[in-house]
Length: 635
Image (tube, rainbow, N blue to C red; front, top):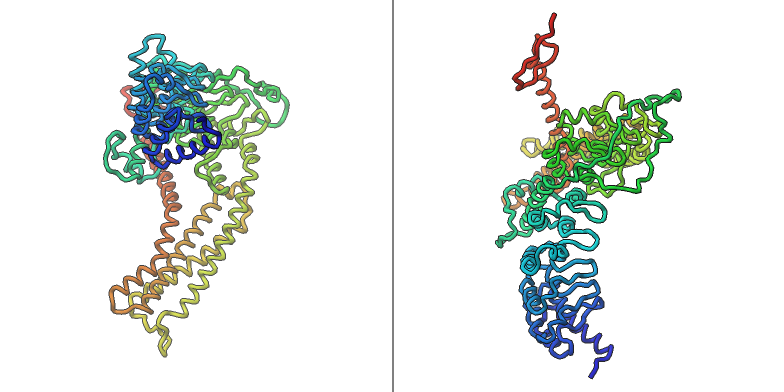
């Protein structure tokens, strides 16, 4: 008797519930009773029961369901869902169904070269999902059954997209490396957007390693082999997986950089000196208003170096410049070189790399883009993108100002006067772009100063009051009863420090509130005042808690050790919480100070060498380590 629509809906609900509840016996029992058995379409996307069991890693169930399919019905295993995926495609989504793939192929070998609606074979699909076991199994089967040109359809889709492209985009770097080694011809192939695998790798934002210091230490010693099965905490498993991805990402990057020649293509550039440097007169060698960049209908993607710079892939930039240092002079269609892009996208690590390349830096520092923007102009422009580290407006403005000062040292003297195609200097662009940010920073700092001032005044009030209501009271002469106790001295010192630091922070916060909030104020003193005031406020709060703890112990303490320890824990608990909540901000400040002192040390060492390596008989210093000495000029 044929099933009604209501019966089919009820059947599908029972089957789906049994599958999701791991009731394998119930699934097999239901499939035995229905006409199509395990080839019954279960979902609205035309997935069969076998599709679902395979996708959800139920290898044992899938093999049992395959036993229900008669040999004469093996051709029905070629059923495709709405996406065109066969059962063999679904085996490529996990590492637990290789046996299912082998059994399906034994029954229906034609599944090997069937494609889905994306034009992907099961091998291509396995590379997309990055599952090494089904990928290697399917690759061996393809290699055994097809050779030469017949193999091409398994490595490419109809839209010029290759299996190497999809492995790189899916961040399946180990499989990508295996493919690049086995099929070298895929390395230089371009997709429909004219992108090679290296350009796609440079366009992604791979997490090459943890930023946290503690995690980095573990990262160095942990084993990256994810195939090793051992008992391990989830935290360490996650780090091992990250390290595994990092190592293979670097391997595929080095391999592609060595073999891919897409880095060689670059746009032409023209040194546009002769541009306008002041606002008076009309003479200029270039009519900037008419020199707008036309729309490029024949757009080509940027080189891997520039793409890696835009996306902050510092490791890829380092590898490319290590292999091909001449690539540092590449420019994009807008005339931007690597420094333009690094500044525009705030890639400080990449600026460091180029800055250490002394000769290329001299070549790049004075270049202009096609809109006559210097390196200094680029500081004033910002790329709107989601940032992982969201900063308050004052912090963002401070970073931009620091970057401006840094780039100002890299740029030429003429760059500060050069006007772009809008006849604006770099500082005019910077001021206009950041004017709204300056207003937001002013509001943020004022609000912050007001709130902190209220807290500081309250703490000062409590500390002042505590000084006249000492624990234990006073005797008839007015002296504190508990003045001989060591904890009373701690209370006195803590209370005095709390009062003093609170009042000092109030003065600093008031000074911030009365500031004119000009750009130069943010650059010079405002941040230092705010950090100093906040530090003093934190010290004030911490010492007030210490004073409270000392008071509590002096007033309530008994002879029992356990009670004293309990009082210590309870009274000092707020101190621990406060320190824990504030430590990250101050570690960041310490880190910034470390890099400042490190840079100062390098400059001192550089000056020292310049002084002591100077040849008094020559007009030029001797290059350290050179075997050729400078010949003195004839008199």
